Length: 134
Image (tube, rainbow, N blue to C red; front, side, top):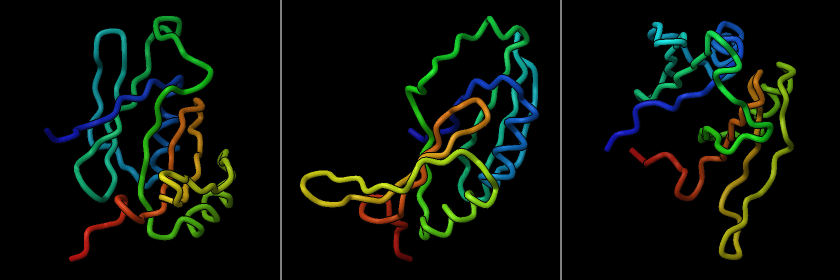
């Protein structure tokens, strides 16, 4: 199986599309209506995986939870530089933290949040998250 996309419910489609474009470097690759909803598909410069943003015509049709039960994750070669870049943009960030498993640091990470509070994780590309060597 090949991952295709991740759907994210948003309250303001244009605001969220602008956020994912500015913060993650994604671009809109498709846009259409689905019964009761408007959708925007966005893709980054690497790979074919897409983020599907979906806004309900009637907000009460799509219940929201206060704490996200999921997140998107992206691997980075320079976590500290990306953190500084995002700080400069004024987006909501959690501090950089170490992830320990089996008695060792597996990776470093931080979370940022989109305009609806959806969680996005940035991981240092090390261990199983490292880019394959050419």
